[in-house]
Image 1: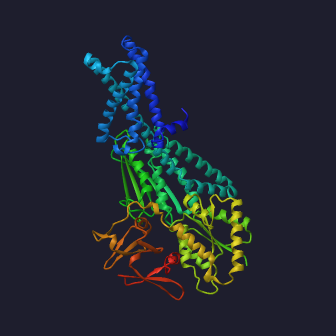
Image 2 (image 1 turned 30 degrees about the vertical axis):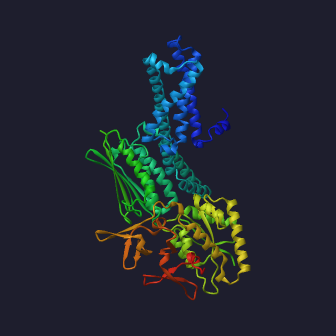
Length: 361
Length: 274
């Protein structure tokens, strides 16, 4: 059907819902002939194909009309919300079965008008068959209801997952960081080409690692503490070119822990936070230290800075909060048992984020 | 005399690059200082009085916008031979909000990485402004159009985003010793930034809170609380009289407060007889 024709036909529905209504109607119409075919094959004498088609189309279309477009149109009365108008309120709990009953009655009436006899007589003649019909249409209606609802929920979840991934990518590929780095590169190209090449290589590695890390399928494969610190070094080296003497950094990772596996890019958001919220606002800059050690059966990793610090209980730190929340989430789902995140900070006294992970044996 | 400029940029390579680009685009321009943070930008600009200031927006300590606002407040206009307010050129890597604001206003801005052709345009614009100023306003700096323009634009740029207010603040919670004192916002007469704290003044009490004023501002009803200074917000209905001293500075007499509250140049436009 032509787009503007459907819009005209469904002008009484919220625009965002029209395409979905048409799609669901087409699915219903796609399934109706299959049911008719089934009826015809199961008892060809009682259900000539043409008559079975008329009944199934009439009943399914009227039930769909009442349960889908009319349900959306009545959303105010039903108390449901956009985008899908799908909430089980007491009113919808009454409305939906009622619609199925009404749709069945209306569709049957159309079918009866075509066939020239009354289905309601069947009720007294053969109550078993009457109830069989009625219950099977009810079953099919509920089947559709369940299917459509599940599909919308799945779509919604996929949308949320994509949004979360985009947000993660945006925090990591922060435009401000990117353009400032490019500006530095531009300056170095004229004054110090070997250093420009070095910086470009680091940016290259950083971008590649960040893009890889923002994809959820990146969890597979062994990523060691040595790999992770190499990524951090890329980033810190980029920042050191930009911040000059305002940034110093150091790594303290014991040799026997270098090959310990860690989730990829686990520490990256912490180091970025340390720069962005700790050192960048501080006139003198400061130092970032990344330390790892064994503590009993745990691997403890610390990212600390000597920056401006913060009040960890203040709710205002939403930017940093996203980085920490993300790390927390990843540590909660570790294979060897849940990890822990501690944030130690006070205004003017820098920040330390301490991660506890189960030690791999 | 050659024009003079100051560069405020926290990244040393970018400051050097801008200086090199300017040497190409405007050979006669003399760079009098290069500074790395907002407070130094204010101090050096006041001391050296350059014709142009290239101001990075994101700098440690004080942002470029805050530094510019302070500069507009502190710029001396009372002496007859005062220099006109410098032409401000903001430099930013990525700041959608600021870029839009600058587009709408006539203050110039540069995007990093700074490109030669674009810098050329900025230079022409600044040169035109300086030339115009030299002809039209020799000495009459009390009516400095650059300053008025800058004040107006900065006020717009610094205004907290009105839509960002989630829930207006109703109660102030201030730590006093190991207690927390609650104070209804309805009783507050004045908020005053003081070093690392904000003083909350009422008729008979004074409390200190650690929430910075700029985090507090979006949570206050702006028709009730007026910002009158970088660091001061007063309850509008408590203001009794506005005084003007001999050099044109305004101060407020607030019912319930002993001290007068100074009004900065940026917000002086708020007080006019109806």
